[in-house]
Length: 460
Image 1 (spheres, rainbow, N blue to C red):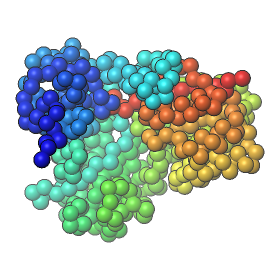
Image 2 (image 1 turned 180 degrees about the vertical axis):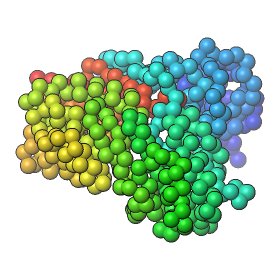
Image 3 (image 1 turned 60 degrees about the vertical axis):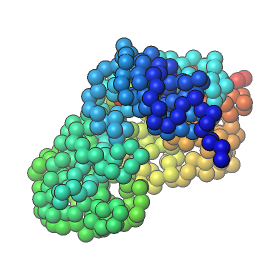
Image 4 (image 1 turned 60 degrees about the horizontal axis):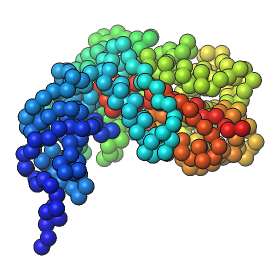
């Protein structure tokens, strides 16, 4: 029988000296043996190392570092090895300036490889002065170990919980809150969820905190609606965490990796807390999407506003509007804004936020962008500018078709995924829209993610 790997230049478990040439979009070091790529965790370009081959495929393999022979000038000491093991901080071994260049290059390469648009100028990534402790939201799994509740994060590609109490990229007050809430639940004998047996109750502790307001929301994600003793747990949380304005129980009875269930029970206050963004005050519910790094989000959204080039006479469509964070800023500079969002809870928050900020020239509608947009096009809503901020999967083909039917002068694309951004830019380019420049913004330091703002102009 022929060995599938006999033509490969390396074999499994072989130790070999390599030089790393590049980084993948997942942050893995790339070393080549006779043009055969090996992907290695914690390898930086220019470094030499002895690696051990761990897995082989037809076109590439994986290896791990046995001995590092040289270090890149971009390498810095690892803040916490656990952040690498669980994947929360895959770039923490890289100088921050190098991280920003890496993210800029990710966008450049995707524009060349996927969009076939190498002439779009990709500006240097806008970074943070302090790239730590920035996350305003945490969803932390709870499990049992030696009879006690443990919080942490799952080791990459497993369901094995690694105990962690300091995540370094989260607001330190959120890290503290998770531990305090966990210990209160422990004190009253609340049982941790057991994934294999589908028993126990507390699955996740979610904490959200207003960066500017300091208001805090606690969400207890449980398997069943019963959680005892509520009458003691709630007062103890409020005493331990004076910033808390909302305590919510979310019930998720399903065997599922999805964190939140459909049922929400309010234990204290309302199902919302507040924060401010670009001068507007926002009410944010437990299920609402809100960017996790408000300091950088303000820079990102200001870029989008600048790209829209509003004079006060335009009609604007804001797709994927969430709780209205971009919509309200657009409405202050536009004649009329139409906004859509698939999550009903978010639209409820958006309407409330418009009212609280005394903004009347915005219309919100519930529905998927790819369904609402064609309907609006049929109704004859003509927009001068369309602003899109889609999830990682990018824009649906039906949405793009409807957007082209509306035929706006400008499309402002806020992207969290350079690959799907590139795919969509190619389609717009083929239909008469031109992009000259892209601005990456780092909302997620120490990670592989990058946001990008691109302005598309209709070619006259």
